Image (cartoon, rainbow, N blue to C red; front, top):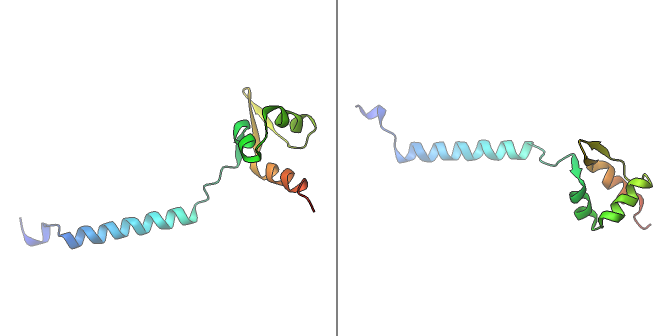
Length: 88
């Protein structure tokens, strides 16, 4: 084994800094917000009950998609409905 084959503490520190830098770059440039929400997430977001959410669906205040028995709501549409009801 020669000197060039050894890993120094400095080498490890530089590798660590490079990895941290790349992770920070990835997380800053990646949008992590979900586009679609399930019913329990909408109820939690709006602070409403199951019945109120059902009324919003029936009255077509919040559009939804049903897939395999699960209801999904587009987050942008939920925010839009919320802003419509905002007091002026």
